[in-house]
Picture 1 (cartoon, rainbow, N blue to C red):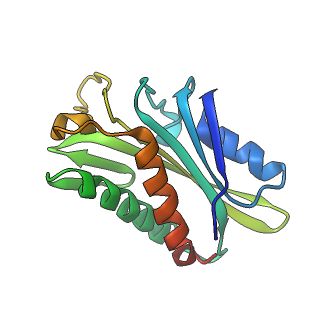
Picture 2: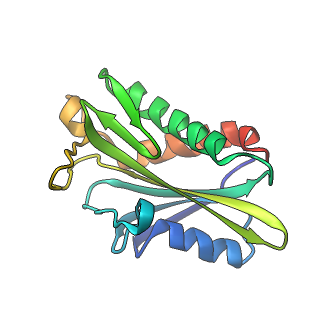
Length: 174
């Protein structure tokens, strides 16, 4: 299945855009924005969205019986694979939704499910610190460009996410 691209300059939250698109009848897609004004994190936390970083949400219908733990593991595996291709450092997963490099957070994932007309949809919000990272007390952060001589291109990363999700949608019980 091909994911339709939705490109924005500025949104409150890519996950909120995905919810709106599903409610309007869109079955699947991938959203990219240059800026989020109210990025969302786990447990009602805020995702600090700094300019130059990657803000993406993927949404699609999933099987009703797929477990949350399988969903989490599949998303972490896909995202870790993309980052690992780019840098030669140990990448760790901090459950339930963070990816770390050298024990510092580089990526956060927010997974939400909604129902529409007896169908279950998954929304995967992905925030990756590409060119900058916020300073958070008692929570070390980092960014991808710290670990490579070549600067990362957000659009190239976006295309890789689109490709890998399209290739692996069947694993989500689609």
